[in-house]
Each structure stands twice: as structure tokens, then as C-alpha cells.
Length: 184
Image 1 (cartoon, rainbow, N blue to C red):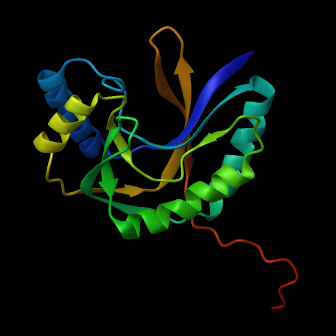
Image 2: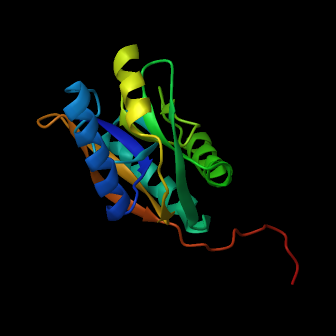
């Protein structure tokens, strides 16, 4: 059976509570919007795959995450995209530390039609009209939060509730990579 999946970074409960509060505040000002009910996350990729491919993806993520080191994620600003997305933006050091992890995961997973993200951000809303986007920009002007990114997750889309849920967690183990041919 084919399912819809996403590999993502999940923030701490404290940051997720902040994201939820911001989504509720924005909804009170502009009404319903895309992503209103989704939990906070930094998308690495999205894809559809059958069960046998997911088994391989999980093995690849275990191997990849074994060598990754935890990254402090500092959330210091807001941003938007022309498609109407409004998001919490990490600082440049955070982006520079997360981008190689995201790239390595996206380059390693051999999946047909892999939709990748290469700009780390925490989405508040998607597909806002120009007017609603301006309301979001004027309402949210200051943020200073952080969390330790010490894993990535595999999220599975639930067709009944139309939301993703975390199905697997892959911790960063900070193990050194083996270098073939190293002499001791």
C-alpha cells in the first residue's frame, strides 16, 4: 500500500506551544488558513511510497542520523514566500548548520518524486492572500526562541484527519563516520 510521508524536524514542546498559540492568534484575525491545525515542524521532504520502500527509508535514516550531531535551533525572526507562506525564520548560523543535514538526507533517499525543502523554517500559515499576509507580518514582529534539534522524524499522513502524525524518530547519535583505509 502506498502512503504519504514527510521527513521533518520537530521542535520542543515549548516551541510547539508557541507555534500553536501564534496560529490561533492569526486565525482570530484572518479566519481559517492552510496549516492552521498542523503541529510545528521544519520540513525536510515529502513523498509518496509503498511499504517496502518505507522500510528502506527507515534504514537509511537510522544510518544517516547515527553520525549527525545535535544542532541548537535559534528562532529570531519571521519571513514569507511569494506563495503566501508566513513562517518563523531561524538565524543564519542555525540555517548554516541545518542545511547540510537536510541536503544529506535529501541526497541519500532514493525516492521518485521527492519534494525537498532546502530552506529551514517553521511554517505558521500557507497560501495567505496578500492582505492576510500583511496582517500576519504586522501582528508578529518579534520572536526569540530556541530548541535542540537532536533527531529527525518520519511523519505519516492520516487520510481520515488530513494531518501528519509522527510514526518514527531517528536520534542524532554523534558517532564518528568510519573512514575506510585509516591507519592507526
